Length: 380
Image (tube, helix red, strand yellow):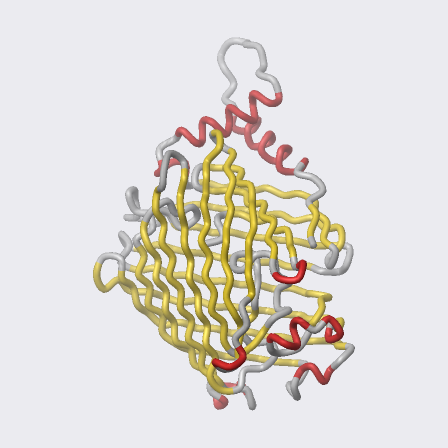
């Protein structure tokens, strides 16, 4: 369970940005109050044209408390930009950076970039994540995950890098090569038998093909359109994968529709299938900050995963919004090992910039599982 202690840093960051952006008049005028500066800054940005408001740098941070990672401080940044020839109505490119450190010696650094090139003839997407996690591990499979007696401590260091370069075939349809590299190192684990014979250190090298169909108006905050993603990645043994050679099929379908004034209905379906011998580290992991929010990340893991989420996003007043979602799915080894895992949640949205939301979500799962998420941009 995660508890949010304070958003003082959020208000401070917004106020600092507002103060920095205020032009000094030629004549002396009464200075606006603190809250007028904050609200004026936000209102001005929300009223700006999309091609202006969706670009620029936003930085925000704040403290938080988590029963696993304890007291910590997180910082997120978003940079919207346009490459030459990529002007409105094309969506802007987007670079997001996340950092977090806690008193439990947990830390993470993440950089994600979605780049649109040459009037959208090409797209390049990349992710780099480095994290150290003193966490809990339950083993592989649904029954191990739900067994509280399997809960064991593990110290895991993980590095993940993935990238693709996509070529536009027809408007909205892109295809291109995909590369993936991942390193996982478990320094220690109290119950090593739960690793099912896999080693503590795991490296994965993958190559494959990605196909995307994308008609979303904005990547960071879609209000209409659909997004379809399919990738086939190969992790062969001869490519330094040792005994853990496998192939992975990753599928996603998302759709966004305007419902009534200020309301968006978003639906997201995902599936991941591993064939071969993936290790404990490369199994399909259930629950993260964008998918099946509310579950302890990796408590449930197996070769395959399928889930679906439907979310209502409602703008309440200017920069303030709320969401509610319902979803569920399963992790499984074969058709006989499927068990339903429900997911519901609520959240608040702070429009830090136009089409850039600060996200505060509280998700709930089965048997009292719950988690708080503090992030930037929409979950999907």
